[in-house]
Figure 1 (cartoon, rainbow, N blue to C red):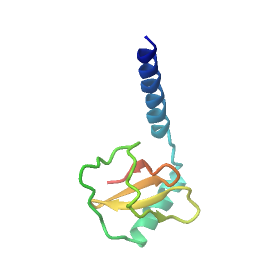
Figure 2 (cartoon, rainbow, N blue to C red):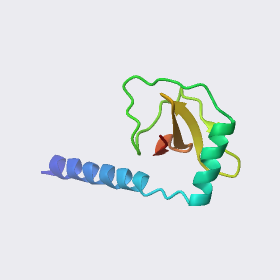
Figure 3 (cartoon, one colour):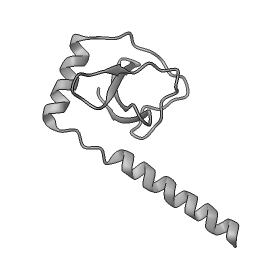
Figure 4 (cartoon, rainbow, N blue to C red):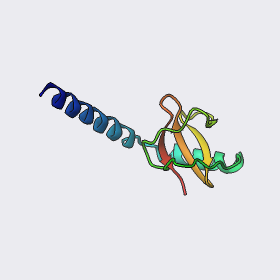
Length: 97
């Protein structure tokens, strides 16, 4: 019984973490700054085999993240798409088309 409760607790915590990652709200002003900055400062696009570009997915430590001035998040270009990442967790917070 104890193992069953532990597994349930772990699943609950994982669900809470995933929900928290999806609740990131980017203000429209910040969104515009991020989009324009990524266009002005284009970086080489990388491919990440086996990594799905979904909100909450953590990017590997080997992926270099680039700063956007006055924004807490970083970005990287993956398969031609701008991906916004929380640098403290390396989790994707938004994927731009």
